Structures are given as C-alpha cells and as structure tokens.
Image 1 (tube, rainbow, N blue to C red):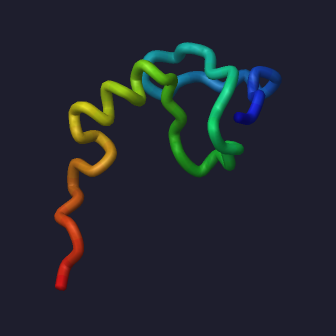
Image 2 (image 1 turned 120 degrees about the vertical axis):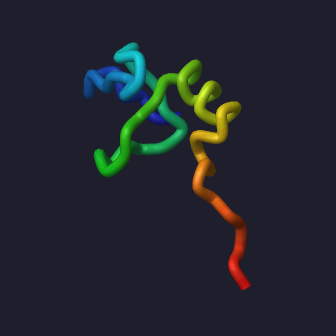
Length: 55
C-alpha cells in the first residue's frame, strides 16, 4: 500500500480524502475512495462498455 495522505488526494465522485492506495498514482486517471469504488464495481462502472474479446 502507498501512503498518499501528504498529496491531499480526493475521491473523484464524493470528494472524500484518500490516504492510502494499493498503487502509486500517476495522475492519468481519476481516483475513487473504497466506498465509491465498490459502488462502481457493482454497477458495472469498470467494464460498462466491455464486450469481451473480439475474434
């Protein structure tokens, strides 16, 4: 886990402070807190446009 509290990161959805991440952020993608990330996973937010491997 990466300690990121000194960077003052905020969740892109709810603006809650993010203090720890399982990866080092590079700034190229939005970040989400654990609660919002779980909600996105349940609603299909991660793969909403995913159609599987095209052959």
